[in-house]
Image 1 (tube, rainbow, N blue to C red):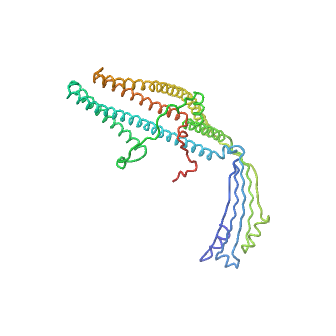
Image 2: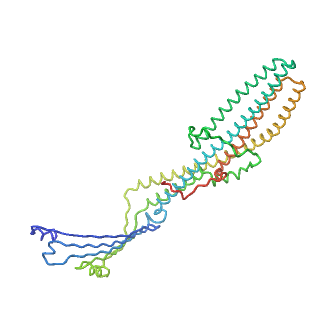
Image 3: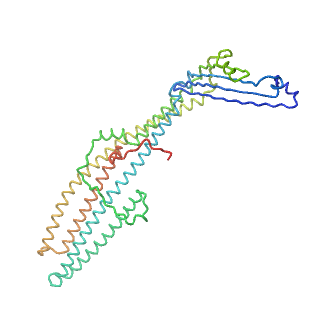
Length: 422
């Protein structure tokens, strides 16, 4: 027991009032330097102090501490490791978001052009149906006048029925694609009964340029989200390896402390004393520590090195796969363009042939059945042309997606200042 405790043993009642105020400010530099400044004030009044006729005690203390690691924990790599990891995790998240957004845009483009193709096919069947109905009226007149056989009438009616079937089938596919687009737009079908899709962009193969493999590969390495994500993963592995290496080192720190205290009968007098060097104490020195068994830190370093090697090999594999896939996509785009050019020439010939067959029918040179067969050939060729046009636009979008430029193509810009907590 101290003196105060001994004295209070003879007191039948002891009371004490104490007020303590403390403020401190500290920080860590990028090189691991830790510093702290602490100021405290304490006032104390008790029944024992009053009994002895002493005034209230007023005490102050100012303390400055300093610590600088020299081995373990020294340098920016060790000090800023959590901040660097957080930044790279954020970069990975942004890359993943861009990838998902690019996937969504890619799917939307596919459905857009599929809708265009199916709408054009629907129009072609409508036109063919109108032509067949007109031919039905002509055949009915010819049958009544004895200029055509009743088999022609059955043939044209059969052709009309077939076109109605194709028209309904195409309409069903068109509705299905529209529903898929509504899903992508997050619009419920129940509220979209009056929505009609009018496509504003028409396909034009002239606006498609085929890049070289070297150019596409260079853009992919710079912009493709999947590759950027793996680059962040490799940087993250490097940081963890460097940090694990620093944790193996012994702990050697420079430490220093300066302390001054005071006690007086008033706050002013106590504070005046504490800011002088009358009761100053200080020390400076080195602190050294080393674990007897550093197996855990060594094993952790081995694990981080393996993770880094795995990330390096994955990037090498991803680069090789990306290069090969780009080569395939470029060749597919070239092939689609060549096919489109052939289809453009072929559709002109098919239309010329069909117009010639109509003239032959007027002069009785061919049977109605032959004309309908030629018309079916034209529609079939037209459908192939539209399908190839859709595949051409989709192939171009897929290539832009692989190079990471799909969002730029449609002026989609991510705002880095967005509040992620909203």
